[in-house]
Image (cartoon, rainbow, N blue to C red; front, side, top):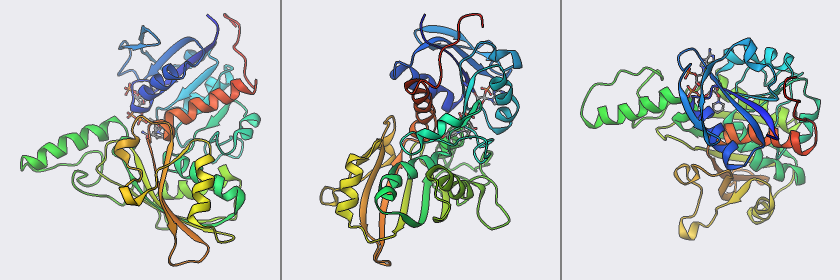
Amino acid sequence: MNGYKVAIVGATGLVGQEFIKVLEQRNFPISSLHLLASDRSAGKKIFATQQEIEVKETAPESFEGIDIALFSAGAETSRYFSPIAAQAGAVVIDNSSAFRMDPKVPLVVPEVNPEDIKWHKGIIANPNCSTIQMVVALYPLHRVNPIKRIIVDTYQAVSGTGSAAVDELTAQVKQVLDGQNITPHVYPHQIAFNVLPEIDVFLDNGYTKEEWKMVEETMKIMHADDIAISATCVRVPVFTGHSEAVSVEFSQSMSPDEARRILILAPGVKVLDDTAISLYPQPWSAVGSDEVFVGRIRRDASHPGGLIMWIVADNLRKGAALNAVQIAEELIKREWIHPREVGK
Ligand SMILES: NC(=O)c1ccc[n+]([C@@H]2O[C@H](COP(=O)([O-])OP(=O)(O)OC[C@H]3O[C@@H](n4cnc5c(N)ncnc54)[C@H](OP(=O)(O)O)[C@@H]3O)[C@@H](O)[C@H]2O)c1
């Protein structure tokens, strides 16, 4: 069959399952699909690309003959297996944080910096979910009116942590309603009916690592080291869909109408902004969609060059699996990858 030999590492996880859905929905040209996970899932059968496929334990020899390896199995797994996969000739698209800030690895959002894909040396990094949706919405504005400063507050869904966190929120909601005591496992505190201003570990500068990822990754993707960025990342009891309140200071003043006009034409963006009918993006309705939704666009009353907006996207889709598959599609479209011959 014509197409590419594709491996998904972490195929049993939330992002891995979304990978399968996205590849199928976009008719990605696959000649064979290889599902990899840890030894815990070896032997499990998953129905994908119209057939039952057995999940295999990830091993160095898993990547022989693979053209494209989509990784979503945590940074440790990526750090160990990605160089092995690249050495075996696969192009790795990695969803973990392992290589994102490595200067030898491109960090790509296809709507923003597709040309960076070209200089990859076997590994391409997929950015953090919160960063992806923010840059998709801000980059089209930055191109016409350079951004000087961004302040972002996130409201991040538990599926961003993985399947154990989804199970934890489900269980805790029931426990709270039944009046039972809660013992948190995934998060340091109860997440049901609560919000936690702690995502990833705390750094010496008082920020969390998630917040710092938004700062560094935004600059790398937009090639804009001079933008001042500050983030506060908050976990909320939402299953899927990250939301962000973003304050942007531009070089020159920009009206909300001009921003709307630019964003309506921007790739990957959908403007939902009519306060008269309470139309604005919501995580609930963003689930399963490819777009980054933007609304509540208004002047910043505290700054003449500022706009404020509300940005929402499906963190498992544009925030993870979809963005990675779009990178693979760019590789093919620009003829920067070709399927290897069978047996090679
Ligand atoms: N969730 C998001 O919104 C999101 C967004 C961007 C990036 N990411 C990144 O994507 C990765 C996975 O996230 P997730 O939400 O899918 O997590 P998840 O639901 O917990 O799934 C983790 C996956 O990794 C596999 N895995 C764990 N240890 C492994 C090992 N030693 N070798 C091979 N496979 C191993 C698991 O396999 P078993 O089933 O065998 O345990 C499972 O398939 C993480 O790096 C995360 O940071 C997630």
